[in-house]
Picture 1 (spheres, rainbow, N blue to C red):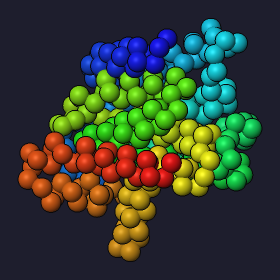
Picture 2: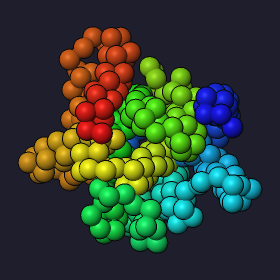
Picture 3: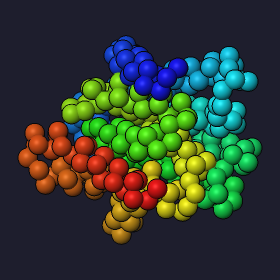
Length: 286
């Protein structure tokens, strides 16, 4: 299927599937965390969309295994496990899985790289590094999904940079289409969230693409520069204040930008601004 046609089909299907999934998806209700006080319940749709897309990829693999280059089976299993870990956390959103359980599930998913080290690129010094890298980026993108449209816009921006430079991987166009179809319900005023399922799936895809294709250390970080900077900044502040790193708050970059703008302006501009910054960083580092 031509790339642009795949992008268009994935966008339309994602838009329709998002609307249907919103009827049954688990909801992110208010929790004791400071950044969610008084929040209205929002459907967590991203993980369900990711699982639907994974189903398509698994079917395509079984039908075209000898005719088209597809991702290695261990990586697809790892991506599936990462997504399921996030969906499980979404299903228990009020109390969540706890950071230990979530980290354990992230690690099991990331361990898939040990079975496909030959697919890793020259910028990856060792398979253990790849394992740690996948665990870190799962948390970075999960942290970064903290404002309406922030993670979705940013992922679209960095994927567009990669997909236009190396258009040979159909998976990237599929993911880009899924995000474009999901965006109207996630921004400017979110009616649906990626949730942990969506952010984990997204992080795993971008993480593996970096490990597979990067030819330098800077290129390895290019897709994740802004989420990693945001996570490092927030965790440092929380530790300095004696707060647990996994305890949510409103110290993220997006929240600081929102506080510095009028409400309506912030609603429309913060996520695209973050995406622009992320795209520039990616283009510079690649």
